[in-house]
Length: 361
Ligand SMILES: Nc1ncnc2c1ncn2[C@@H]1O[C@H](COP(=O)(O)OP(=O)(O)O)[C@@H](O)[C@H]1O
Ligand SMILES: [Mg+2]
Image 1 (tube, rainbow, N blue to C red):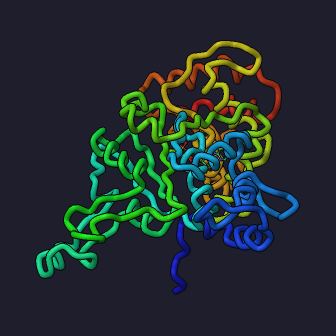
Image 2 (cartoon, rainbow, N blue to C red; image 1 turned 90 degrees about the vertical axis):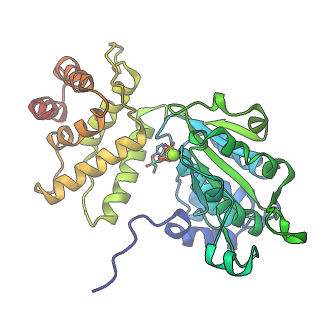
Image 3 (cartoon, rainbow, N blue to C red; image 1 turned 60 degrees about the vertical axis):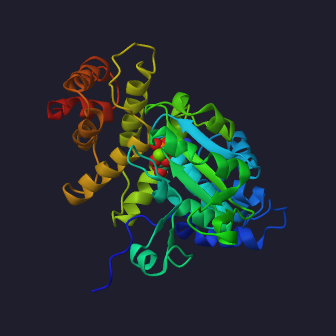
């Protein structure tokens, strides 16, 4: 049996050929320690049709440029925003292009400890030989400093404050102390190319609680949801097609079904229909990332359980598990939305959506 393929290769693997092409054509200046010039990094993230490079992050070029400038200086980058606005995705793309790899990641949580960030010990060796380089088990921050790479720190504000503040001296002095070792070995100097990209969700414990000292060492950039329907629709179509292709599903839900999906998401997210009627907003986050997942599910459902053609009725089935997560009230809100606003809409797919409403929870 052939071994199963990885479920989700990192950006540097998925687009290895693009990265190689960009590197080959790259004659612009590179910040110290970067694998590519800033212009080539920008092309990788935002796309460049002349080089056959796909657009991957949809957003303002100015945001991406400011993010890169921050990473080429001695402050870290903190991407802030609602869940599902592609903060993690942007940080992965930047790390892949700047350092050639995006897998040095610390996942922040209430249980994150210093040794998951900096280093731990191999206890057998530690007991046998005492503290030594051999016994030290490097964690992502250590590796990034040692090798001059970008390290990603996901959901940094979910970490205890004292753990967050453990980054202070690293970000300002660019040195990591290893007090257990002596002499030269007790200090790890960060190499050129090292920096930190952190992300934080505005729905979690806020960035407000982050210490002023740490805030000062980061450049903050807010990532906003995609402002217009056509752009969001195109992104959902493209990402769903990519995920479905990986799952061996040959057909992508049609544009009319996707338009019903994205419109529903946008209206529920905004608490207002496109023609200006107020509605009761569900408590769940209805991000673009969630819309992509629902489009993926609709395609999977149609292919594996249906006749291959996705309909708005499949959409109803796949929608409720995404919208209704936190409270039964959300089920009522979704039902009210369909009853009041979808009912009158012209078009075969809106009609099918309305007709399938009995499948809502
Ligand atoms: N502006 C965007 N550009 C590209 N993809 C986006 C964008 N907004 C949302 N997405 C979709 O959302 C997914 C990423 O969400 P993620 O990075 O996990 O969000 P966050 O970290 O902000 O919660 C992407 O894989 C993509 O499918
Ligand atoms: Mg994230």
